[in-house]
Image: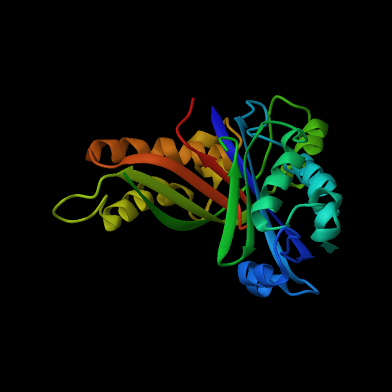
Length: 136
Length: 139
């Protein structure tokens, strides 16, 4: 039977929303407080959902310890306590949470110990979140 | 189509063990969860139904009715129980979060179908706020 296993991780990171494609005034108008020159930060919650057949022997879609290791290696160690703007993956890209969400999806897509990546959800604060799914 | 979700909590103990494996393999695969004396969680069960709101009541489903069904079919069997020892479906199946979600579906689906209105859409079981499983009725 197919089921889905979900796991939530926290990463604390800083960023600044700013694009050289816009003028300083346009950046301020577009990004508001998030355009603050020295940046700011969030405790992001990254929800990873993996779909797959439930193992007859294990009762599991994916081994939690192995999933944690993959997410730690690919995502948490990379972004936790880091400045997203300085990561090469955001060179020339604004580190909005939309882009962070797609970036994390791409980093994990081929790194799972079992199953298929169903979705990645990134919660920037308690009041906003973004999701990218396999259908996207 | 509107989706409606009802949440409930239950507290239960369990352990992970495959009788077909030697003890060493159980410990290797399941780690701390293989402790035969068990451990426990405060689980959260989320049941989502899909349907059209009734033109008279505006309800997809009466939430009090859904609460009662969840209590009768799932919580009565799982709350303050040892899942391996008290729930017959886990006598030969490991009570992982995935299997609990599937088992809760099997427990709820007949009563929800018999009511003839909204359909069961998915079930989520949170073992902790950071670990959960979802079942959508797929084979």
